[in-house]
Image (tube, rainbow, N blue to C red; front, side, top):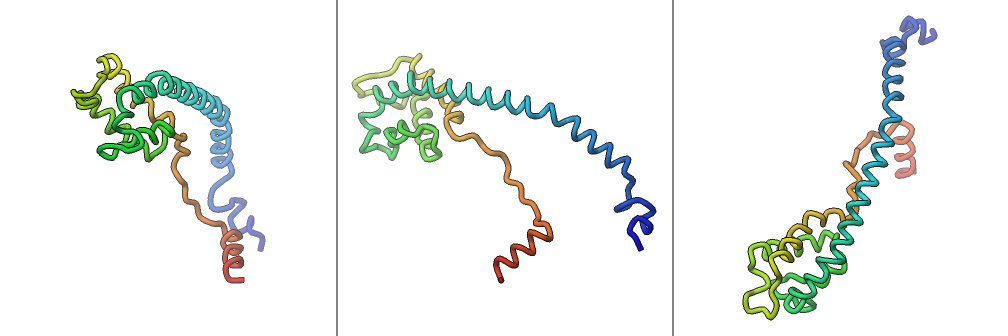
Length: 163
């Protein structure tokens, strides 16, 4: 017996009117998304370039002038800012930057007996830069979505695994 005669012309218990309505709504919303995605990418790239420029012009010289004597190749207190300068957006550098900014903010670093002391304006700029640090790391691709295998994919997987 054909399937359409069993369900009375309907597949899976619903008529085609709601399905076509849903499809129309989905298609109507599609043109709006890509434009907003491109705008977000352009904004992100602009913020990334601003963070790179700030790092190159302000943070790099600040760290080289006031921090590298103690926190260079042989780091004190386990804070190696030389490696953090090479890759400022890496996950391993983030903790170093966080500690450095916290100490600069409360005037613990550079220590009072250091040869050079930064001005309050230089300290403020260094502290403000930590907010831009996230733009130097790779963009988050979004949540990982787990999906189920179709019957054909599942069968192919089993065939590949067990022969």
